[in-house]
Amino acid sequence: MNPNKILIFDTTLRDGEQVPGCKLNTKEKVGLALELENLGVDIIEAGFPISSSGDFESVEAISKIIKNSIVCGLSRAVEKDIEVAAAALKYAKRPRIHTGIGTSDYHIKSKFNATQNEILARAIQCVKWARNFTDDVEFYAEDAGRTENEYLARVIEAVIKAGATTVNIPDTTGYCLPHEYGSKIAYLVNNVPNIDKAVISCHCHNDLGLATANSIAGVISGAKQIECTINGLGERAGNTSLEEVVMVIKQHKELNFYTNINARLLNPMSRQVSDTMRMPVQPNKAIVGSNAFSHSSGIHQDGFLKDSQTYEIINPDEVGADSSKIILTARSGRSALAYRFQNLGFVFDRNDIDALYQEFEKVADVKKEIVDSDLKELATTYNNSIAVSN
Ligand code: KIV
Ligand code: ZN
Image (cartoon, rainbow, N blue to C red; front, side, top):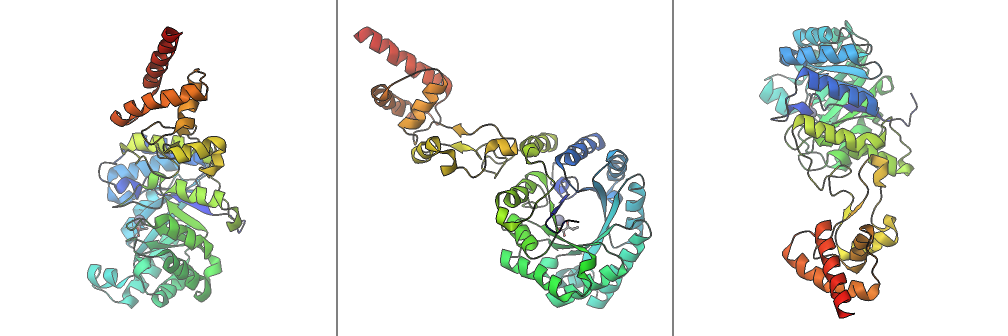
């Protein structure tokens, strides 16, 4: 694999689908899986087969239809889980079993009432068991974000020895700061002797709004895979947003990374996920929010109209968004007003715009946004008053 390639592991259909109200049926999941493959996702986590018969059926149906992407099924470190995941993935061209266990003291003591050595043994055992069904086994160390590095490194070394080909380092609770998460990945790179035998994966949650920053810190430190979801959907405050990490990597050429994602499909994909999962996208969401390419204050509008790059670092075309919008509000200025009139076919000179701006301000102070019909009315009233005075 090219060392600069960052693999995109999409978990919209698994971690994303855990959002209350986002449950999908098999037909919806298959439809989204096909779109994810078309988007260029390297690995599609299709579900958690043991969790329900519906999820089993979905993973099986996705396995039958997906040709290029790896199809992945989640399991706990339990033999039966792994067997059911393997059965659901039976028809996949490129199956991956994702198995693992919690490694932080919260998990070891509170959840399992166990010791570090017992958890280590279960981790090794689950990877060995999964390797009976496929050569592509990913191990997750749940709550790695709050796991002490020395123990985490021991677990990771042991699971790679047992056959894990990808090692997932989840910040399950979204607790880490970017420099901490980056250092954790660097610690593994430097202290796990067999780390070159596996791909390190970042799986970050967004509880403190740091999921994207942490994932990027992870790849800068040597991880080669990012786990993410469309629109950042996921448990609680969500997962790393696919569109954000893809565009950080694309915009920051100095990082020297690339992904296989067709960025022009990001906005259509976002809309499709939002519609299918019945989960609106917040307007100010980076890359795919309805305001991501809108300008509404006078200073910004004037700068944008002189040179779009003054206030936009991404061309909306590049991410399949509608063209940039100049929104007229009470904060807008004369350049924006003239621009919008011009788009509607009204040609006014500077004096006209000065006069129209006074009328515009009166309406804008009452209405939240001035739309085309308001502008047409302003222009018609103004033109009539000129005609009368002549
Ligand atoms: O957040 C997490 O730790 C997970 C694992 C199951 C991979 O989703
Ligand atoms: Zn997760």
